[in-house]
Image (tube, rainbow, N blue to C red; front, side):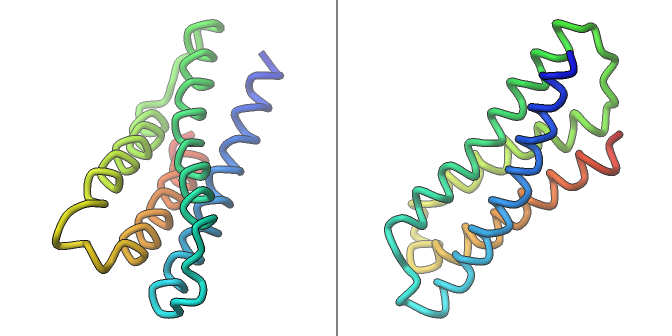
Length: 123
């Protein structure tokens, strides 16, 4: 159990730090076009996919070790997946066409905040 718990904590920190980094990058790219690199979108994708990794690892822990899960931890944790889905669904909206960097910058920082809430306030 300890190895899954350690993995869950490590991926949680990855989610928080990577979304903070790509959020800041995307916000900066909104104002500085030279920062609009293709690799930024790959980094955003990896940062956001970590939400799914967190949910999978957490679900394995709950099912395998019969852990009683705090409701708020689950709420904030699964809200990250919903946030990723909402960001993805808005990417082609005509309203957001010229504001994708702003959308993903603020959205990634929001995901970072949900990760922090799940880690510290949900336990």
